[in-house]
Length: 51
Image 1 (spheres, rainbow, N blue to C red):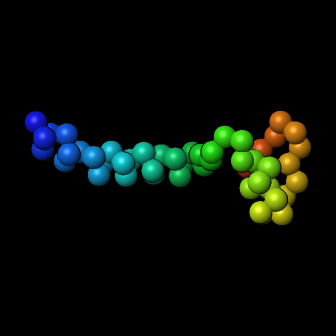
Image 2 (tube, rainbow, N blue to C red):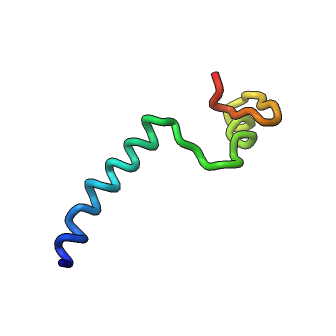
């Protein structure tokens, strides 16, 4: 039972990280900060990733 739980952890984590990257996932509420860091202006309600 232990092996059945531990063995799939790495492939599942890899799949989750890859899907976040493909979908350009970002933490909620940080669009304005990312916009400032990347030199973009962000309107209220928008995101720094809208292009």
